[in-house]
Image (cartoon, rainbow, N blue to C red; front, top):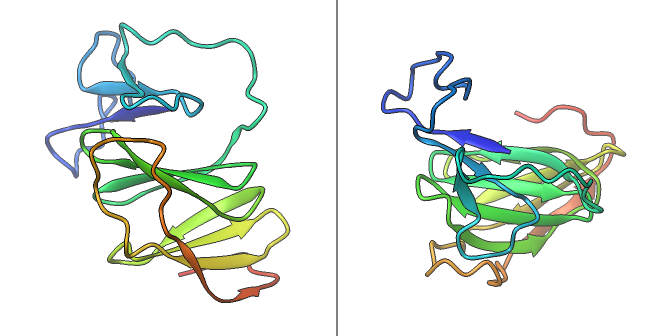
Length: 151
C-alpha cells in the first residue's frame, strides 16, 4: 500500500492522494516485508507480481499510527510519520473493518462474519523499530455478533 504525507493535513489534492509522477514524500510499504525499514520511496519500490498468501484485509489510520490487518488475523502497527514498524499482535481472522477510539487505546476488529472484537492496545509504545515485537493486546469483553457499523 502507498502512504503520502503532506504538510497541510486538510489538503486533499492529487498530490496527497499519491498521483504524483516524481518521488516526493510518498512511501510504499510492502505488507509482507518484516524488516526494520519496510517503507520505500517510489523510485526504489519494486512491485511484486506474485500474490500474497496472506493478503491485507483492512487498514486503519490514526494521527500517529497505521494499523494493517491481514486475513490470517495478524495486525501490524507502523508509526507515523516515520513508517517504522512498532510491532504486531494476533487479532480476528478475515477482518473487514478496523475501528479506533479517540485516544488510540482500543482497537475494534469486525470480521467478515460480522463479529466485533475489541482489543486494549493502550500499552503500545513506539519502540526501537523492531517488527518482531509482540504487542500486548488483550481482548476486552465478549465478542459481539452481527455488527455492521460502529461509531
